[in-house]
Length: 110
Length: 112
Image (cartoon, rainbow over the protein chains, first blue to last red):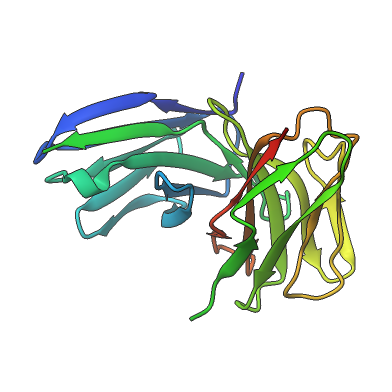
């Protein structure tokens, strides 16, 4: 069983919809990283969280350490948000290594 | 602008040949990482290096080798011992602490 589970695996939404992607993990962590991978393969960092909530533009990330769960929300979704969203967790005392979920593939239809 | 450069973007290799993937960064990051990505799986760690002249095996190091002679460079060699080398390879770097990763754009390796 993967230490990091994401849901859903695939998601299709209409432009303008509110989107939620979930990440659950089964180990103790020191940080959680949300990443975006575009069709060409390049990956960009969206958020690093260790508690609470962060917002950047239309993206919001939350984490609940007690429940070992994080969510990534996209408000007013747009076709350019179509990508794979990846959750990764950093375990303590592992030299800043991250362990990755398998990703959620999002398609936003105009 | 600072960043990580991976080359080439696409690489074809014949079975039995070694091939080296390049990863260069100008971010002054101490730590560098190589990951492999296969369809339906999360990124898996091949090797990582936290300082020059030192590197550690990740979860799937068999059939791969690395070197870290300069802070800026962390090349990955896929050897003929790697039984299933066709994959997408990503290099990342980090300045450690609470900072996340910066990724390169990846190299897609196909064995023909």
